[in-house]
Length: 352
Image (cartoon, rainbow, N blue to C red):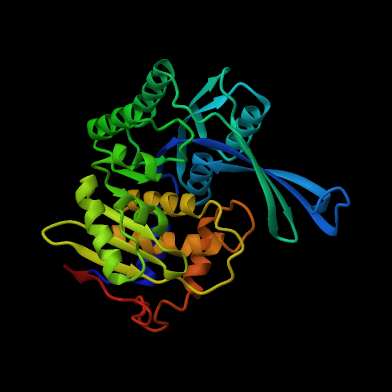
């Protein structure tokens, strides 16, 4: 097998600038109300939050394109937003990030999905959502596919970000895959359980441990059940590859071929403050790295490092290419002399 080395990964990061990536999925505006708690309300047994400030961040598919842009890529977003103020805020934020928003469809009769979180002392106290989760109409679906057909030529990878907010219906997914085949574009999918069968034939899917357990019907709690679930999902979905993200256990990459290859990638121990958006970072980093020449294993190692950093930040976050380089260079998972991925805590790729 090809060795994963620090030098090779750093060289790959230098290839990211200018790489074109197209993202299709649910656009979400994340609002944060920040404050402090010093007492319990006399009206009900709930904390009283003294608000200090508010902020907005890009969520869902918007966070995926944000991650791509921060890594030096050129991202195009194909999605739907409402004709409302949150939609205006999303568009303005995306434009400031340099994202191509020409594929975003505005629909006056549908609210922009907005998640509002109340955070005090780095702890989320409450979240309330404003959304409409029904699938978009046939007319809107056709407009989305027209936009995708326009922006996809020349892109190195197509990323699908499914938050089950109504964009990636089975019909739209079929159209997206048809266009991926038309242009020979690899398709990476961050799926939700309810719609996972819509993504048959993807280059790779990136469910988390819970999603993989629910989709396979196998409770993943050890290596044996992990391998069983991985095999079952690959067969069910006719996917070339599968990456199961496992939190503090790292990630496991399944790659099909003449034989099935399984690679376990360890997580670096650190404090976890917020896992919001970690999956966005994984698929964005994997996609742009693969489009720039990385193997799936190399792309998975890079995404593991990036996701390990963003969970140490409250709220959705994205790393710059230079920040990811610093994390790689300081990582204990690489031998300081050879630069090879350390065997300690890492089970080498096995052939099954």
